[in-house]
Image 1 (spheres, rainbow, N blue to C red):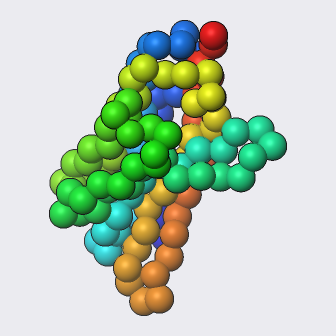
Image 2: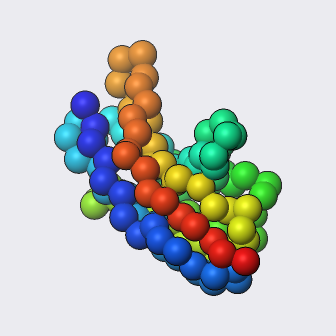
Length: 118
């Protein structure tokens, strides 16, 4: 199993910035991709950004140019730097880790609330 601990959420005004962090522990040897998803009230969970161990990144169109994902493989930690935040970025942000061992498995953090006021 993989345990994920997130931090860094909070309340910020539109146009502001926040940085989220997520550290994985447990069976992390075969984790080859980590990322962030978010879920706003009444909406399905959606991809925000992912990063592979090799550093390949993928972003949702809605956050490109505003959010930056980065990772520290040695610490099994992933960061999401969010800038130029908009009220529509308000959501619970979930860290995700994907293990390639066996048939593959996806693991989730408990989520951290990000609220952007207008």
